[in-house]
Image 1 (cartoon, rainbow, N blue to C red):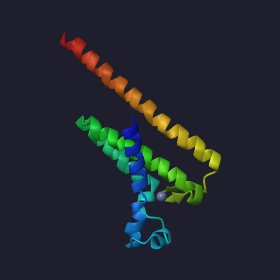
Image 2 (tube, helix red, strand yellow; image 1 turned 30 degrees about the horizontal axis):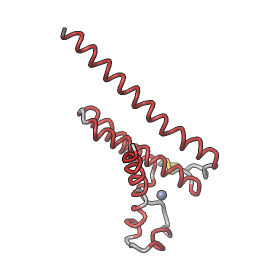
Image 3 (tube, rainbow, N blue to C red; image 1 turned 30 degrees about the vertical axis):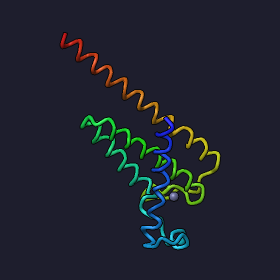
Image 4 (cartoon, rainbow, N blue to C red; image 1 turned 45 degrees about the horizontal axis):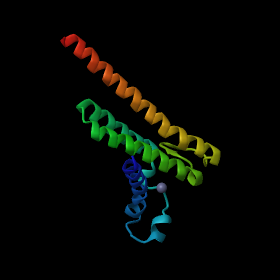
Length: 138
Ligand SMILES: [Zn+2]
């Protein structure tokens, strides 16, 4: 369990690497003084990429990669919510207002719970499919 938390934290932290990529510099001063927001901070883009990965790996039956997609989604949204305290969410083509701290706390708490709930529902559907298939085979 702790390994999953660290993995999610690693993904969330690596999102800020786009500051350095966009600045084309390893200097912290250059990375934080960009004229526009770097691409990994586009919530629409990152959520679509994660959902595409989740969908593709789900259809292929690759459960490990599907879980990695869910981790990317949770880490990205958590990171973007934290950044939204200063800049708002970049939900392309729009940008929201700066997020209120209470809204940040509520959303940061509810989003991972919602994903966990969806994963439990997903497992039940798979379980029911397997059970139905077994019954049909017998
Ligand atoms: Zn950031």
